[in-house]
Image (tube, rainbow, N blue to C red; front, side, top):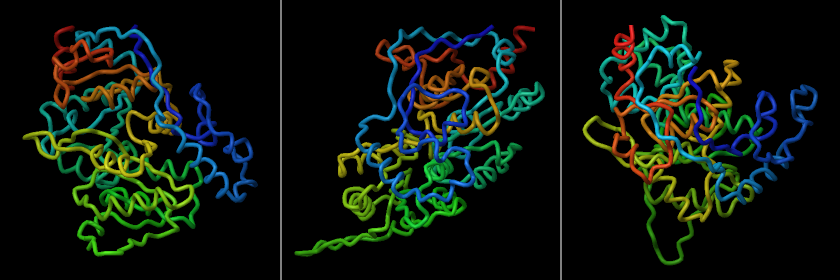
Length: 373
């Protein structure tokens, strides 16, 4: 039997009201403002939540780091030698997308056959990406374009996670959300019934700095959501900064803090973490991150599908997001070397994040399976 024994990281990203539905709750304390009065009680759902939201946002501001690392000895990752044993030991495989399923717009070799193999064995497949530029429906179309049959319900992007998180804390519908990011975030916020401004529309806006110039901002903005943004500019930085610093109780959310991303298969490109970093510098505040490695999406998935986390294998190409994400949830972890992480990076003495197993690419499930027959 394969057992995961890696160090874990726990997160305070999800409030008590949301986590109360889960069978296992992190030992990190959850703000008491989301007490039992809101848990599964239809009559009391109409209670005004603006005060609770404000208190919660204030408390979260005081946390400099929402992910608390638990010290444990790192056990060196083992090369995957028996794919059948790993496949048989879990019910669900969660796959990262960039660097695992595709690079840019190019499908990684052997992916269709691998997914078909896993489905034939009755495994549940879920695809989780930190890339917030697309909505779940748009990602569904990308899978289709690449010749992969994936249901929208199997896709979880950080754009969706941002909207789901705001719903989970009863973010007031009379408040607005300023978005530094692309269309995917706007679509998911709209589907969740939230009012928003910003996004690509602000990409062409400029600030003319004249003596005495004062930039106005919407005082009704209650949250700033920052994701990967190819239309990033100084206007957005200043507008988001004003909202976070001057609007009482304004939340600062990040879809992810990835340093690099795969826009093409030719090279790595600056990731969403670079946009988030700009506001961290200007606001002197740390954001609440809803994407990997935060446990919010893992908890959401486990609750939605009724999955035991010990029956999940997280497959990804990043140590500090994908593998940590799996370890946070107590899952088995498999690192593939088809993305940003090389074998030398994994085995570097300074690297403390060790997956259970590593292999070159997910299609090794096919060849390693054949070798063990």
